[in-house]
Length: 243
Image (cartoon, rainbow, N blue to C red; front, top):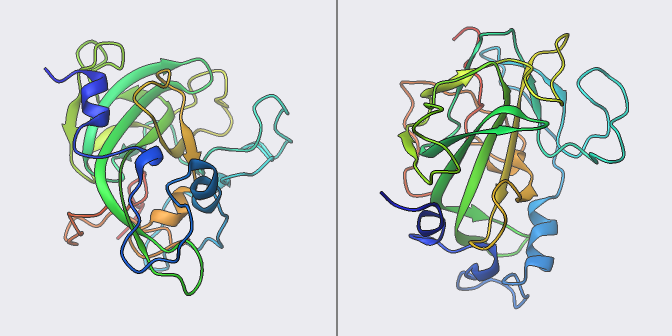
């Protein structure tokens, strides 16, 4: 069985070793301090018009919580959008990858889904796109139940379960210290991790940059739709209410 560390570093590089595509302007995008602020930039967000999905209660970088109250300074800005739902609503994989379960103090029942893939990234207007190969993780928190077997596939064991885009990995809930019984939701965050970083600590960036339909365009998963397999793009982590 592939170990946690070997999986993270195999098949891709981390942010610290990102490759600059031919034709890009001469700027040190290999440098984490240069690249991460660009990956964290905030973009306008829009919902799909043809289907209904969970609304965002608290968005990426927001200091307002799902209940409308100011977040505590200790926790800082939100690391990703919080999609509303009813307890028991399905939570699905935003892209294919290797999944593991963990319990988090604030996030409660959590599924970490690792993606070794490439994505296109245009760092600045008029600049050539970068093709960035790296391993990133999408994180689904406050679940009521996890469909990733708690006993077998766990962060501490280094065992992972392969899941496909749109496959159910859990249900909406309010578990963990950061959950809210009155506002059940799934917290969806995205980050990257170096092989020597402590498990559960990530360099977070903006999930809205990676929607299938383009930055800021929240894209629901449609089973009949085809998706690029060679690069990483996300569909919404909750199934649409209607199609």
